[in-house]
Every structure is written in structure tokens, then in C-alpha cells.
Length: 299
Image (cartoon, rainbow, N blue to C red; front, side, top):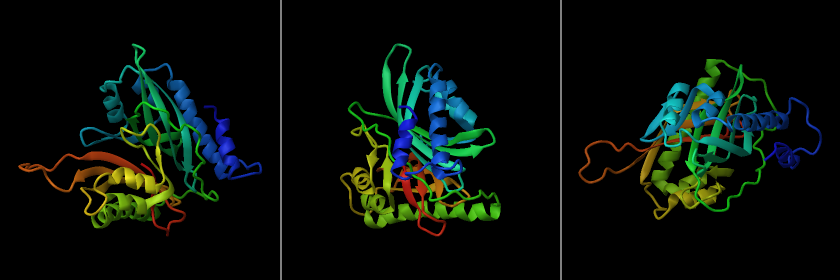
């Protein structure tokens, strides 16, 4: 999917030519960088193809209940996976940007081509940070996509109203990070009160997406649909799982961030003595301003 398609999506937001410093142009640069990394990975084994876009401190959820932390740990996990020899190709369908222009996200569809010609369809999600080397991925995950027709059209970008000057003071960034940690905890607590599905409905941004499950070739879009997906057969309280945030990154503009943690069942199986390992996750969050409530937008 060539990058000018993204500009068609942007046209619904901005009808006149945008200056170089506009959110539209900044987000478009990230979208094109994702496409460029995909092009460069096309003829390389999986880990070698993905390695150039990873930040040194990238985090990737993986089994069993593991958050692989750091570039070398993530690449080691990829090199020991059943897909290690496969080549990856991918196309983003949405981009998001923080108001300071230093954090962003993309997600879309990926295909792994194995040496025997077998092709495996996937979805992927990436959280990006701006470094001295350019955009690099700080959070990454992929999931198997079931067979079936998928909605691959480019989605409208998630943009701030304007760009602001980035700030790096620890006294500013730490309260922002703690606010996201608290939001993730409140999300889990709410699920115990109202049920898993209703909590996902209440905490979702209107354009939120979920990677879906075994029955979803496409991304699941909108908090209501996501609530139905995760609520399953147990829509009411209490939630059968709980979670918290182990690591969080937040843009200095306080409007975009990512949380990492592990989802664990609230009840132990009969006879079990150890705490269940659970499922690692990351969630991308947004809000219109630092004083507004956080809402998840991609997970």
C-alpha cells in the first residue's frame, strides 16, 4: 500500500497544504518510515529484518508471561521462534502521534513467508519514539491472523490539534508516567466492579482498536465491539482476570503513552499452589490533554 494513500486519509482532517511542522506532516513521516523499514526487511530473515527499527530499550510481550526487555533479548526471542527463518513484509493501516511529535504508533497487517513458500498472515502493532537516529520502536507485538478477508483500508490518523515543544525534565515526565500507571490500575479495578466487557467499553477511546482473536481476521474497532469481544460469556462482575502496569512510557506532552504488564486470573485452579503465570500485554493510551482521563486507543 503506497504511502500517498495516507494523505488521502489526512485530507478528511486537513483540506489545505500543511506546513512542515504540522501534525499531519509529522505523522506522515512516521507512517513512511514504517513502510521503509518494511521494504528493507523484505529479503532478510525475521530478526535481521526487524532489528534496524528497534530501539535499544524495546519491549516485546512473549510467552510464557514474559516481557522481553531490550533489543538483544527481543532479537534472541525472534531468532529462536518457529518463524525465525521467515521473511516479514507488512503494511501499516493507521498512524498516531503525540503533540510533542516524539511518540507515535502504527499498526497493520504482516505476512511471513517461510523458506518452503508457506505464508503466515499476522497483525502487528508498534509504539515508536523519536531518537537521534530517527523513529525507533519501543514497544512491539504481533499476533496470528486467522484466514479470511480483512479490512485493510487505511484508517484516519490519530493526531493532536497542534505540535508543541518537547520537554525532558524528570520532574515533568515522572508525574505523567505515574498517571498512566494509575489509569491501568483503575482499569483493572473497574473490571472487578462492572465486569471485563463493560470496563473495556468505558475505558476505550471512540476509535480504539483491539488485535482481535481467533475469529477476527480484521482489527476489532470501537469500545463497544471490543467490550463484547473481551467480555465473552462472562460480561458481568467480577472480572476473571486482573492486571497492572510494570513499565510505562509517556510523551512529554502528556497525551500519548504505552503501558506494559501481565494479565493474571483472579482465581487459582483447584489444587494450585503457585501464582498463575498470566499473559503479557501492552496497551497504547491517549487523552486530549494532561488533565483529561486516559483512554486506551490500541491494544
